[in-house]
Image 1 (cartoon, rainbow, N blue to C red):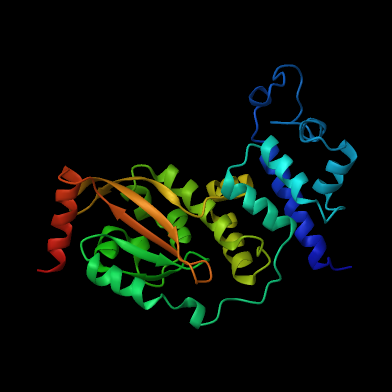
Image 2: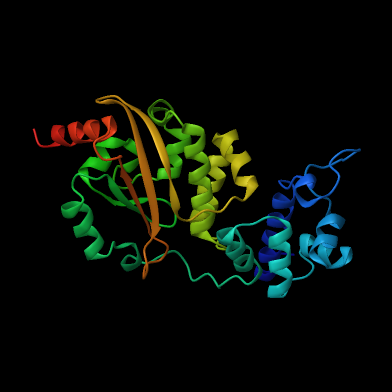
Length: 280
């Protein structure tokens, strides 16, 4: 018998709860970490105890037999599992998924004109790109494209991160970059893991990359934020850049990604050199 949409959603919730409790060190929640533990992280009964719910009820949540946990229960579980704000919102979304209405339309894939102008004109000297919720590159200015092959128009950034060997050489912190990429994908798709494009992408990467399989199973969620990229660029050498990831309001999960260097730093000079090569 085929599973219903509600059952699939509940299964995703259970998978998420299992993945996150495996990552919590018992000592971090004032539980003894020694002794004989058959599983990493917290036991089901420990999560239930700390969240103030019964073990039987928590078991039903993980097994997908309860589909309507209340917001206070979800908040209690988020506290025990040490989820940040984005991960907590993701937990609530999994418990009350919005109906999926199909893949984004052509209009939904259009970058807002103001953002397009900002990227191409005001930020001509700043690498900037916009990704959709599948992490396809919708637009990128020339400097972003020159900075990384993952910014080529039409490229899927997360597929490039794991399958394009050039990125392993380009990014000195490739491991950190892949963690960010998977966390972004989890956040952008939300509860829409049954979207055929998501299924196809996840299946492809899972089949071709053990690293992706491991990171996907963690269910890390991070749609936005800031960090650093360390690159060994073939034209200008070592570059250390900051990045900002911003969700674009009024779009279907579009993500603006901007890289910038510290003012007057060697990396700023090298970024300027790279920009000069585009005008010659």
